[in-house]
Image 1 (cartoon, rainbow, N blue to C red):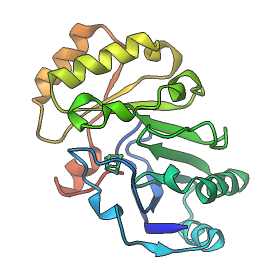
Image 2 (image 1 turned 90 degrees about the vertical axis):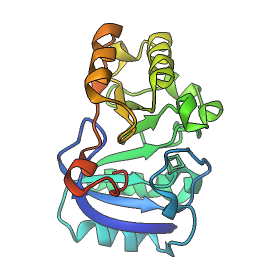
Image 3 (image 1 turned 180 degrees about the horizontal axis):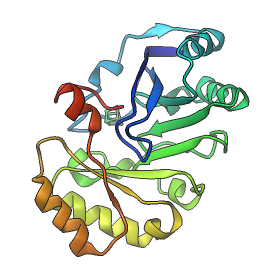
Length: 213
Ligand code: SF4
């Protein structure tokens, strides 16, 4: 499979934020979000076998692994095999996906963190809605919010799919520097939805250039 990087860091963008985690970042993405901070995954990378990836993951001795990208599900067969192998080995496996591809092919033991793309991303037309009908109880949904239009869109989707009742808490993640955080917090409180304000922790630790983990 084509791998951009494997590294050990602090999880920054889900309810697992703050925990040490091994990241397997796969190459290629089928989307081009306007605010993407991972463009370097669109090409390049190195070819690695499943065994090589697992050996690299095991070298860190950390039981939490996130498969991310790019869009990991572009390489659906090898990535599904990787997720299943890691689950078999007893890892807690997160798979972060842009939400345009079918997630039902992923091992049910993995926790899926699925983006719903808002209008400001330029990719809202690509949302694959059946994913939201098949969520497992530990799966997470993330909205990256660039402005009030995105926020209202997220609230509409959360209400339509009852997301704040079916999963622990949908994640509302403001685009770095694009929204005033006090204002953003007020929007959530006024909306009455049970969503989690999700700051991009890695950017607070390592600076605005740090990429999505
Ligand atoms: S889905 Fe993720 S990696 Fe792909 S363009 Fe959007 S933000 Fe970038």
